Length: 300
Ligand code: CP
Ligand code: NVA
Image 1 (cartoon, rainbow, N blue to C red):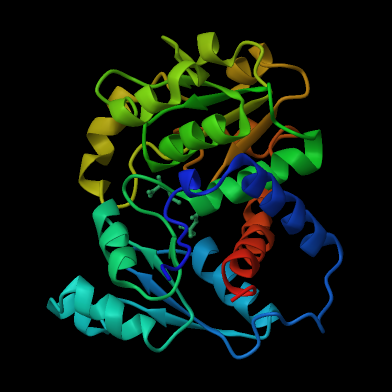
Image 2 (image 1 turned 90 degrees about the horizontal axis):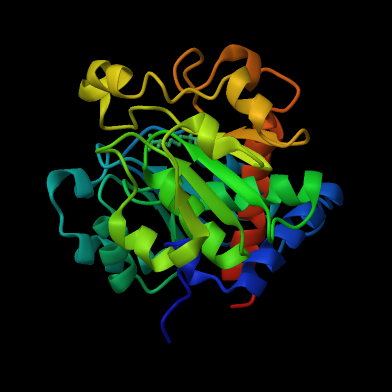
């Protein structure tokens, strides 16, 4: 039997997505140290790129559930010396119960999943960051209730986070306003598949009108450090600041997956202000991924 993977939010039905959110909230509010559904299970975590939140939340989550997590970097394994992905996937999955990958190319995760005999989780690729959306949506549901029918505004790069927001809009049924500069729009196929749920705007101010949630991310993602200077010029009018928050709904929230660059994609007064929920959002990585691990592994 093929294992159940979590490569994209589109791997979930809307009932499953909502189920994970509610379970994450339950796990957060009723922590029971004796509940160890993953006792004896091992999660291998392969990081081609840096991480604070993803690594710690998965590692802590496995520990809470009685299991273990292994941190593997390509530098220290044969993957970094060119061992084929399909061989690595078969070998690693023969020894552990679940594998999380953070990679540059999205295809690395899909190829790995094809040859893995255990569930594979996407811990971020150049195309998507679905785990972050579990946490973001948990945070919205906790603070404001179901996001169905609401309006979310994405400001900035049409990147991995933006793509996962587009997927979330499709599954959870909200409208996504996107304000991105020309040349930095989200992937056209991902946008097309979302149909009328995604709408494009000329500026952050135009996009943010009547929004319930404003989200942004760094102008240069991991691996794009060489483009930082050029992107600072392209994105200079794409900052979430007080003027942008002003035109959104009064009870609008601000989210950012972190790490953030204050003074670039978001002003300090907004990210450190009363509408910002970045710290519960970050903490919810732990709870949302515990719900995900339980969903993928505990019914084996
Ligand atoms: N938001 C997020 O994925 O953070 P890390 O890069 O620290 O894991
Ligand atoms: N878009 C960012 C997200 C970091 C969590 C990146 O890929 O670097």
